[in-house]
Length: 183
Image (tube, rainbow, N blue to C red; front, side, top):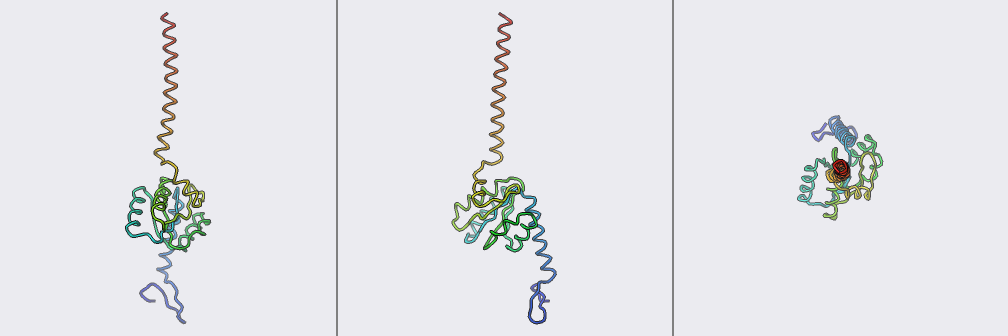
């Protein structure tokens, strides 16, 4: 065995050592678990971006609770198959990265779309949300949705205005009943 982690067999054939194989299996297992726990995932082509842009992207994703990783396509394909997202294997070519979000199903799509709009060589390839595979258009549509907080605020506002309307009607009824009783 040499110090690069490969076993050199007779005839010059190179075979990965048990340690390298074990390391790859752990990467696949960890990524499989992330994909299974994720409410959403976006796969991107990150080719041609600067270190500065990559650092800014990673910081924004981290701040939103999105995990971003560059993993070999063969390992990512295995993890996708294990997690039930085998359909994503066909987009795993070239320089790809995976952004997964366990909490906010819109965050990864929003941030990567914003970045793709800004950096020409950065492309969204595909993704999933709540178990449903999305193509590029689907990820872009997801990115256009308002955030969870805004949607909750709108819903609460709707409920609140309905309650105010009901309270107003009830108060008018009480006032009318009191007027009739005193008259």
